[in-house]
Length: 243
Image (cartoon, rainbow, N blue to C red; front, side):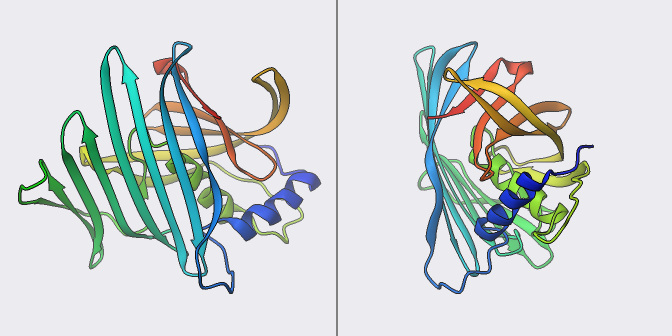
């Protein structure tokens, strides 16, 4: 385990102050703290784009994602909206499939558990599915890579404080849910240290975090402001790069 250096601790102060999960801003209105696009590549070829926006206020965050994938003549369009409380608990999550089919799901807290409303079409009645999982459960829907950035922020915030002189981020486990497939998952995340990697012809010193989702490894690299720049999933020959 590698401790955070002084320069990384300084950056951590910034990310803790701007993270939508931990912010204590006095502003009542939501402000955009990260937005942009991720290119999705499989075996070196671009197959899709995720467009995202993350807003924060004193009470929590809103995250909106639009996904388009076009691979082998098949086009997939999906959308997700997630509302989290200031401590990271789920307030409301909605996933929609716009193409090729029409389906959606909504996840909300229900007493001490989670309840998912599943819709197989635009005018169908929902099928309700309860999960014996708390509101602190991490949402990691397929294809939405912004959800991984939110998890990394949460992990950093739980492990470190701006006043820490030495910050060791141990491997940490979370319970997770993939709403559109209604699948509970086991997640662990670990800080691996600083690595120099080449992105679009430029060598960068980035912070690496390894994410283990049901024994599938996702390596993630973040910059000094803890914005996600790259994801690599070797098992599926998938790479995600911020445009």
